[in-house]
Structures are given as C-alpha cells and as structure tokens.
Length: 165
Image 1 (cartoon, rainbow, N blue to C red):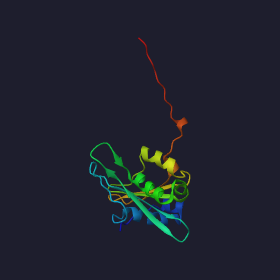
Image 2: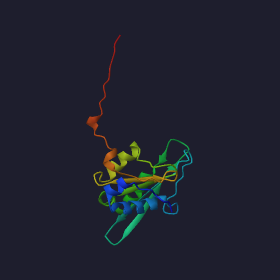
Image 3: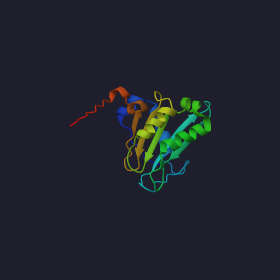
Image 4: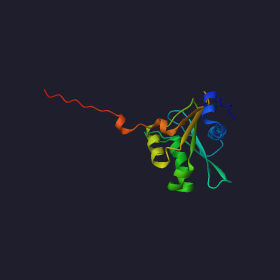
C-alpha cells in the first residue's frame, strides 16, 4: 500500500471526496488488481482505475493498464480502463457511471495525453469527470477536473503565411 500525500489545499477544495479519490488511486496502484502493464518499449508502467456503482449498494472496481508493442502501436491505460467499463455497462451507461479515473505510474503523477483526452471526451461526461494521479517515485496526489485539460478550438490561432517569389 502506497502512502499518498494530499495537500491541505486539495483537502479543502475536495473535502470528503478526497477519501474516495484515494480509494480509487489505491486500486490503480495495486498491481494485482485487473489488467497488468506491459511497457516493453518505454518501461513506463501506467495503471488506471475507477469505481462505479450500478446501484448504490454494489461498488465495482475496474482497472486498465498500458500495453506497448514493438512498433508504433500501444494501448494507453485510460483507453484500456474505459473500454473495460464500456464492455461491462455499455457506452451510454459509461457516460453516467464514470466519474473518476485514477492514474498511477512508475514515475510521478501523469495526466491524459492528447489521444486519451480525445477518447475520454468522446466516451465520458467530461463535465463530471475527475482525474486523480500519483506515482511510485512521487506519491504527491494531483486532482483535476477533466475539463482542466480541454482547450476550445477557438483558442487555437493558426496563421499561415505564403510567400511567392
């Protein structure tokens, strides 16, 4: 069991939810729970976990892990996790049930990459999703609303210059 560190600021901001977030993070940190990591290229293990309730009496822990192949393909932990939830509950129910994703890495805290953000945006309710993260080498917990990682398209300004000689 990892001794996670939560700042006073996060405890004030999230109150009693911090204990639930830590429970989900404990599941992500448990190498015996669910799919294993296979980071044969990067050596960087990422495990993801969530707890969902089909009804209020039956919490279900679900996890996923990253798998790398010896070519450009890989399955990221977040994608693995969400696919397990979708397989168990269906895509519409997943949007309702998936409220927190915990990421635990062999390094420090990590946040979803661009591909994972796109997948989470399409597969979850982004307004109610929280990302919790810490790592083996850095047990300081980070907690962020998923929307912190989204950027509206209108915020991207691209200007192309053409010169004809």
